[in-house]
Image (cartoon, rainbow, N blue to C red):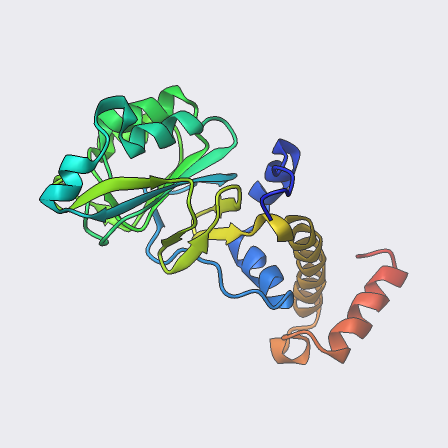
Length: 239
């Protein structure tokens, strides 16, 4: 999988316009597991995000780990930050939901790098500043707690588990008001195709139910009635 091409900015633009529930539905059609990062909620409403994953893994604090951890600019979080830029999303795997992965001074660098977003199953500090930085932030919550007393940044661009979901570097990470969804790099083109097909079909169903009110169960989940309805709309040039 490492020899797959990077997801293009054009493709990210298409993903950004697809609601996360539709991405989940498309992955389900392809028999992929649920891919919502549990606990990652938008810091503020109206956020839309799609970017290539750069991953950062935290480990529980121990004095010997803190001693062995690279210092200064070589510390894992700063190495990860320098891999970020437009079209990327930093995905930080925390050791617990209430533990801080960083705050305003650290994430100022992400703003300088024009990062496409930040996602964590942990928490963030200094949210007033983060809201001003202008990039989407998704986290379990906010906190005043310090991170180093509980966890240390350790791994960069590894496969991580974030919110119960496996994330590989280079995967598409998409967010909106509902959730954050990970679209594996190898599935992106098919997911977009299926998502657009589902959106078109669901629009036909909603149009029909608005014209002829009744139970959605006649067409939903998709069945033979749905197929006939979509075909009728297509013949009339309405789909």
